[in-house]
Length: 501
Image (cartoon, rainbow, N blue to C red; front, side):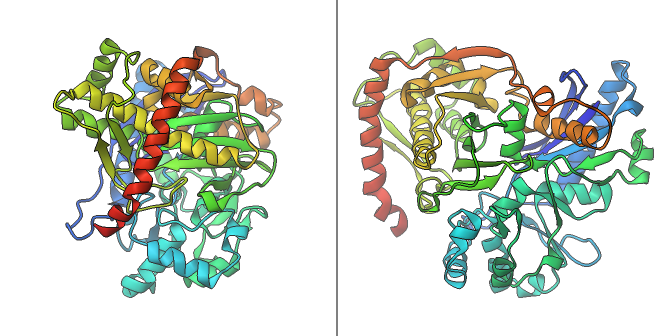
């Protein structure tokens, strides 16, 4: 049996996976952002101590549930880690956190992005990516400029899941997929770039060691093992949340793709080698498996837009919002129905615009709550398709796309995404478990790699059974294509307004 831990933005999840690839138990704990001063509107931070408290509580709950089910927790073999990418967790030479972690959706370091690209003109070739505020490197340059007393004390910079690893094992380590999102990695060579580190004022000594996703990076501390009733089991490198989510639904080979409908929205396509299109803000990262890469587009607000509209329109929760849409249906969307720009936290692919904002457009006296809900679902869909088109421009296209994440449970939204994109969308078992499943699978691969276990990659990471398939409706696709042109024009016209506010 294997534990998978997923450190998300809004919560932490732990699962227990057996050797038949069945999830035996799960547990979760909520997380929240730290409050920010009104002048710090682009800031997004969390307290790493809260991550560890939630992690330990989730593990205790998971192990208690396993015991109640009659499962011998002493038979658990390894732990895999995954979590939110890009976060800057800075610690001193005593292993103490110096300040709150700056998260992936923080937009304060836009000026530092331009500065880093000036300092390293070849940064896009090295990283395969456009420098963006969400990435880790510009956050550290911001600290160097604005909090020099903190910057001078930095002994290690850790990504969020890797800080949990340090708590679990005492080791400083990371994996290729998560490290690729720092903008310090030479993605083609799968190694730190000394040139980019130097441009940020850092060195390799302040970085964790690099490993492929299934590689063992350490063992559970003796005191934790004793407290939890576990052996000193190995902890594998793991993966960034998107790569782990892909592993969880068997997206491991070129030509496979998935669409993650979580807090953020991610289109993820496995590539046949290293490809890049940084000019359109496509992310080119290492996958969590050796000698494998992927392309990715990212929306900063996806399913979180549904939370926003549910609160705005007085729905008790997103489930009630989706139930209302299911009752009314999407068949009668008018050509002049309201539009929604889903940029509640700025935007990444393809616009790379931290100033972009959410907008409802085309409201009339008769506009009802359900019209705003439909506009929200549609607007997120349009934004996701913008990212898919950017990935396609690299020559990587998939006809079938696997849906994962909390939003994937909505049949109405799944069908709308098929109609908007003109591509088949599928739901598969395990898609709602998310990255934690991929982390647990990586733990199993790691144990297999270090033993005589002959299970193959495709045996450990199978494509899960199909739950539902959604084929695009040609007539609806044509209607959405016209509305998407208006959506695009609306964004373009508002760009100078966004930057003027």
